[in-house]
Image (cartoon, each protein chain N blue to C red):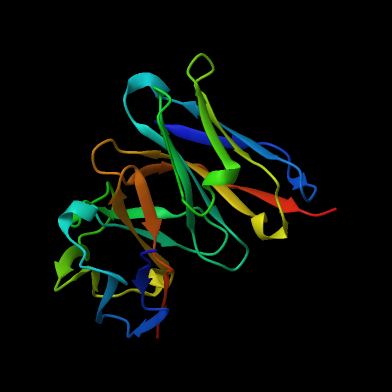
Length: 119
Length: 110
C-alpha cells in the first residue's frame, strides 16, 4: 500500500522559507509516477503548487513559480517543497500526492499538514 | 490566465440525481484535459472519485460517474445519499505538466 507522509515546521515567520518533506512508503519514487504538492488555505479551495518527476523535471503553478522549488531525493525515497518569501496568504494545509503518469490525476494523497505563517 | 469554473454550491434531495460541471473561462474541456474529480469532507484529505473523464477510482460506488457534457466535464451522482454531502473539486490538465483546480462545489443533500 502506497503511503505519503508530510513533515516540517508548523509555524514559519513572514519573509522566511517554508520547507516540507513528503516521505513515500510502499513504492519507489523512481518507479515512474509523478509527485506533487497541493495546498488549501483555511476555508478555501485546493490549489495546485507543482509537480515533479524522479528525473528532476518540474512543473510549477505560474502564480507561484518564482517562489517554489520542488525536488526529489530518490536515496531517501522522498520529495520536498520549498516556498520562499512567505506571507500570511501562504498559510494553508499542504498535501503531498502521487500522480498517475500519463493521466495526471492524484491516486494517493498524504494526510496534509497545516503550516501557519505568523511572527 | 484560464480559470477552471465550478458551481459554488448545489443541493440535491436524498435519492435524487445531481450533475456538477467543470468548465474553462476560455475554450472547451475535452478528454485531453484528463478531467478528474475529488470529494472532500471537512478536516479530511480529498478522496479521488473519477479520473480520465469517466474512470472510477478503486472503491468508488458506481452511482458516481463522469462525462463530457457539451463543453464541460461533468460529475453525476445518481441516488444521492446523506454522506455525499461534501465539497467536490475538479482538476484539468492544461499541458506542459500544469494542472489547475476548479474552485469547488459545496453539495448539500437535503
